[in-house]
Amino acid sequence: MKPVQLVYHRGDNTNAPENTFASAESAISAGADYIEFDVHESADGILYVIHDETVDRTTDGTGTIASMTSAEIDRLDAGAWFDPTFAGEPVPRLDDFLRRLKGRIGIYCEIKQANAQKVVDMLDAFAFGDDVFVSSFSADIRNDLRRIAPDLKRNVQLHVAGSLEQAIHHEQAHIFEFLEDNVTRDGIQAARNRGLKTMVFIDTPNAELFARLVEWQIDYVNLDFTALFRAVQHEVMLGFDDAGMAC
Image 1 (cartoon, one colour):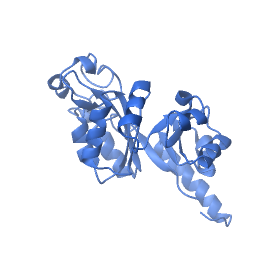
Image 2: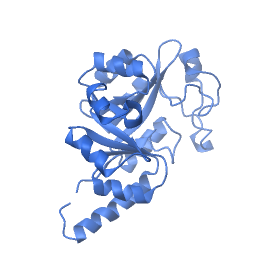
Image 3: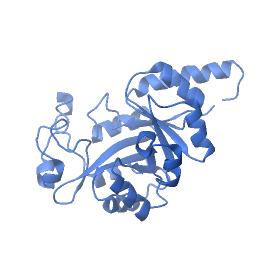
Image 4: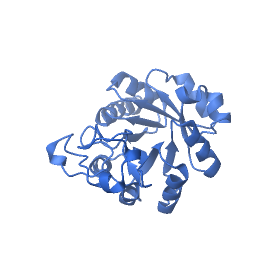
């Protein structure tokens, strides 16, 4: 039985402000396999690591990223909202973020609103190799990614693709992602039989589902409650080992 690879959603976001250097460092210290993060582009063409299209929720500013200049975004505090000890955390520029992570961890880059070519060029410049995959909820961005970077690993969600067949033939995905309410053993096996890696996104502390996913041997979990998942995984794998089954 292989351990499931842990993708820390927006970094270690339960212990540090999401999509910041602090959350990335905390994830690396905790032993994450991958960090998931989101990318937006400023009015003057600078790529930033931030989830929402506005800065309102996760900084001390207001407004849409697409309407703000990099000078304005660079002045924002992206840490104090989470806890005063993180005051002064910047909204990371993508190049600085990748520079910090290179050679230390795999990355899952979700492009929210940004030029796909610019993101791909930056990923190529930092040469993460096989330790990177990308995704987007934007059909236009996914089309661009297939066209400009056919060999770059792409992830698509079941509810976005509509079906496994669509994920394979239209989206040309490499990783097939489920949600908590649509993941099944049969679905995982069907995707695996077609040559796709599998992943599930979970944003609740669902220990019962965590145990099933370990048993079903899903490839990746993208989640917030990583410490709980690690504990459940250890217990499940220990049980298999004690039962005399190969791990």
